[in-house]
Length: 420
Image (cartoon, rainbow, N blue to C red; front, top):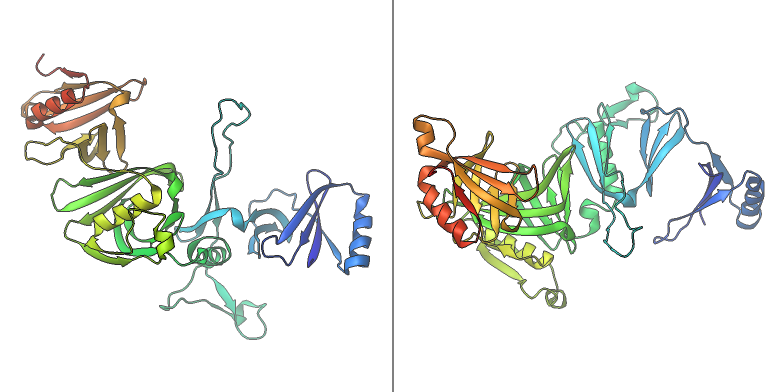
């Protein structure tokens, strides 16, 4: 036993005892009435030689204060009183959002549906919190660190000034179970182009997750959240895309990304060696110790092995030029539409996936008049669920026959309003 603190909480008082055990650093007891305070204080002093410290919480409701990164918690204090605490073990990810914001993400608990147990219902939980931390990170200089004259701005390895937000992010990442402190990665791929969310990232694979490390943003993707994998050649015939469907999606502020879109040139190759023993490799039959192959092949096989998900290839559809997809628009967004054996996938900034099993009909129509409408047509996908119809516009007229033949082969109801 190292120390003991007494807090005034919603239900009477709370006793927190800090231990020297790494697996159980702290034990918390709730529900002590006020009359027990003196008894506990005497017991700890007489038998354990520990002074009980009484701490009052901040009650003013201010949303500005000071963030302290402790051994096991992140403490937000107002006027030297604790307003709230966040266990570092609950932090799934930390990012510097902009120049002065630190975004903390919390992993939602695993929820299993049980139709026989009606008490198991999804719960509302906080999934993200942001701290606005202005200014630069300052370190003390000299013996008197209390005055501003005796302090200087911290610099990184390149000589650039470190902001206070970056310093807080680094302190949290160092003590929380995120980033490199999780352990050495199994394999790492650098400078991977990701179109959604856009940027170049380093992919670090761990036993239960893959971490996307960017210049200003990091993401952690548990393998359990990977639902679908698609490996699709781009219509330029020069690049290959790997689309990863996620549930729950990753978040950046208020933006949700249910899909990751990775892209490589066809001729780009990579040499990789996995830091795994033969016994560990035996748990993944499709995984190899060493790889020397195109980048898209290696990374898709690694993700497939760790997640256990099948990689869906493009369907048997061929457009007028013999490629696997067509160009189309959804509203003002231009993208590439692929016809899979069991559905459609539209690759753009926010991909759209449509299953044929949930589709009522697909109809072709020509909107407007003039030369432009004679060369293109619209394709409306009518879903079985109301209010979820999607219109793909500006499709080249040459593709009409190819699309119709493919959809009829898959048993999809097709309505051609152009011929009518």
